[in-house]
Amino acid sequence: MGSMGILIAITCIANYISGMILAREKYDTLKMIVYIVVQVLLSYLLIDKVPRIIVYTGIIGTVYLLYDKSKSFDYSLVIALFVQIIIMIADVIESNLAILITKKDINTLLYRNDYNMIIYAFIAILILSLLSAFVSWVVNKKMKMKMLDFKEINSKLLIVILLINFIIIFSSGNVCKKLGFNNEFIQSLGLLLCLYTLFLAMFMIMFIKNVVSEYDIKLEREKNKQLNLYTKEIEELYNSLRTFKHDYKNILTSMSLYISEKDMDGLAEYFKKTVLPTDLIINNNEFSIASLQYVEVKELKALLAMKQIEAKNKNVDCNIRVLGIVKEINMGIIDLIRIVGILFDNAIQAAEATESGKVTCTLKQGDIFKIEIRNNYIGNIDDTSKFFEKGYTTKESGSGIGLYNFLNIIHNYDNAIYSVTLDNNEFIIRITIS
Image (tube, rainbow, N blue to C red; front, top):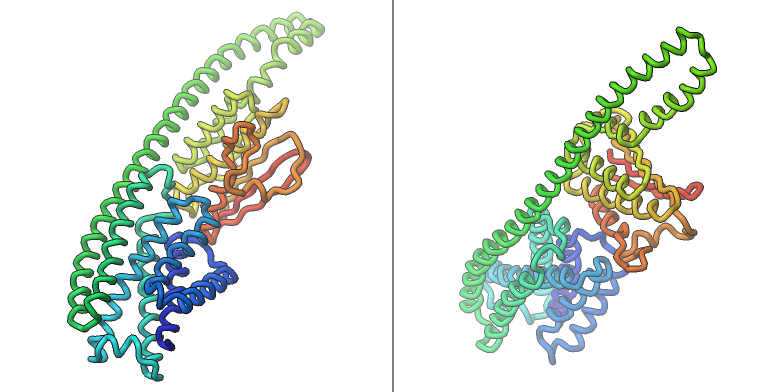
């Protein structure tokens, strides 16, 4: 049972690490230890009665650990099934490599307990762990799984596809056991699984690329919508400026008449009633959109313009200040748009509930990029961390946006940090991207 014990223990580690890599979640050392200990104990106690217990516990454990972080059962199950498929295929490949290198019978390799076989089991399963973790990393990097919202794709179809493939590969192992382990069968199974894996990989790549393509098309449509709104707002701004310029000439002409007649009292009254209100026009948020000319990242410019229009339509005073020229931001444009959009939506939502809603956004570009969004709010906030919890909302309808998605995105970037402060009934969130 010695070599099998090592095999079980390191397979548990492979399960956990592969799942965390594929899901792009950070490791929790304590949970990993508990997960491995429980899985090893169950495998030791039940492996004779339930030979494939490690597979079942692997799926259940991975789903539990990922659900604890993502709160999405579909997402957790997809990752768990994918990891198990990778590990089962890698196990067959590793067995074939062992047969090829040692020239020994597979039964001898699996069930002997001498020192050499324990060393073999350790090295073999270590290769399995590294291979499964590497494949998980490649899939995650190429397919951008963390970026995809599982509500936006047919997650049930993806689960069915993975489940069918899992059953096929899992059943092949049971058939192998019933027919008896031998080198020829293992080698034949390895060849078939290699071909099957190639087919599966091609299918999955096509499936997920199609999903990513649809996601990008949807994003492009949203971006075009934002650009159209921005263009419309610029046109309205231009017309307002033309009208203001024409009116201002008339105002100056009228003032010159008061001055030529030395009617200071009349001039003072005229200034108070006619000229002074123009300051409100100049400072109106319709004109603050002009500051967006310094934002050269067109996707961000369009988003800011759209959010300013949304705020105005909801009677929320929205002021955007740009310090420096914003040219390049060291973050994926999709993720940048998502986090800024989330922050603005939350700020407008909170400010809208106040008597005089106000949102202020400041962007600063230097060696690093900084963005600050602040809004006023009503009520008492004792703990800002609850805003980042999955499903948290202040709306009675329960349809609040929350900052959970923001947190998931920002944690994917080591060069991005954020802070949250409360000051005189203002909620302030700052992001720094180096």
